[in-house]
Amino acid sequence: MSYDEPVMKQLLRSIPQEGKVEWIGIRKERKALPIAVEQVEAKEKTGLEGDHFKGSLSGKRQVTLIQQEHLEVVAKILGKASIDPWLTRRNIVVSGINLLSLKSQKFKIGNAILETSGICAPCNRMEENLGPGGYNAMRGHGGITARVINGGGIKIGDAISLV
Image (tube, rainbow, N blue to C red; front, side, top):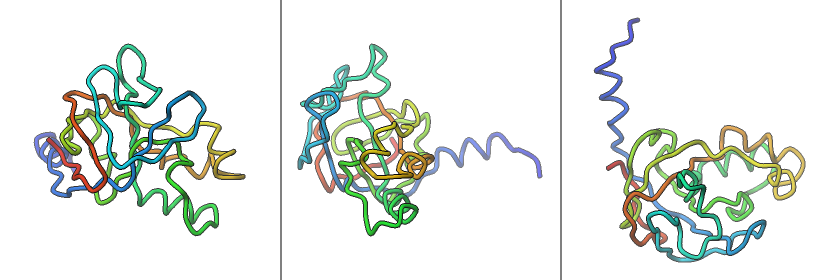
C-alpha cells in the first residue's frame, strides 16, 4: 500500500465530528487543584482568565484539554468507577471529538479560536491525585495543550470543532 500524500492531507483536514465542553477548571495559583467554573474567558497571550498558568513566552501551554472518553479509560485501568476531572489538573474536558486529530490545527471552542501546541503528558502529581499507577494510567491519555489565537468566551456545553 502506497502513501498518497494528497489523500492523507485531505483526511487530516476532515473532522466531521463536533465535540462538546463537559467541564472547565482554573487554578488560581501554582500547585493548587483546579476550581470548576461554568464559563471562562480565553485571552490571547495570557490564556484563561483567572488561571495562574499562562505558559511560556511562546504561549504553548495556555490551555490544557482532555477527553472525557480518556478519563473513562484511565478509571478502568485504575479499577475505579470514575475519575473527577479536577484530579487531572487539565483546564477543559471535552467529549465527542478526538483531540489528537486536532494536532497542528486551529479549532473553535465556544467563541474562542485555539491552536494545538502539543501533547499534554502526565506529571508526577497523577500518582498523588489518582493513586498508585496514576502516572502510567494517564500516559497516552493526557490530552493536548493549546494556545489562544483569538480570544472569546468558553462555557460548559459549547461546541468544539475544526476551523
